[in-house]
Image (cartoon, rainbow, N blue to C red):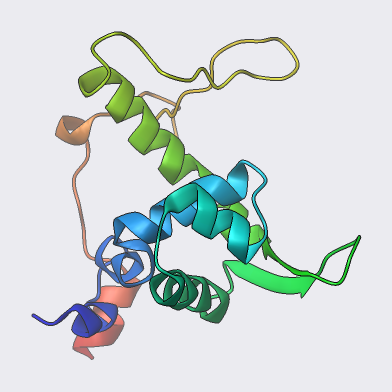
Length: 152
């Protein structure tokens, strides 16, 4: 299956991969959350070619994850996260939790602390009905209305 065809798959895991399924896009988002907003700052932080960076930024703009606006100070334009972009944060934190557990033999390189109490931020998968913490073994996929609409 071609990469572009993934957007037509009736799957809410597969479809987002068309937007942020490569390392550069996820790294741009990571740096966006750390406060980087200017093209040259992204390029400097990532060491990415101008063309590839522009392509990834354009895709994030097209999908409403970033918005381009004039900087508060100066004549520059900035790339800012939209509310849709901010909703990606738990995805990055889930990847970070996995990376800390399996790819950080000396321990986490960065602690993500709750500003109010200094506790550590972690992702938790839970049932929206009873609040139980879940793993893949306790979850059963069932057809939803989006799949039925595709079949009809």
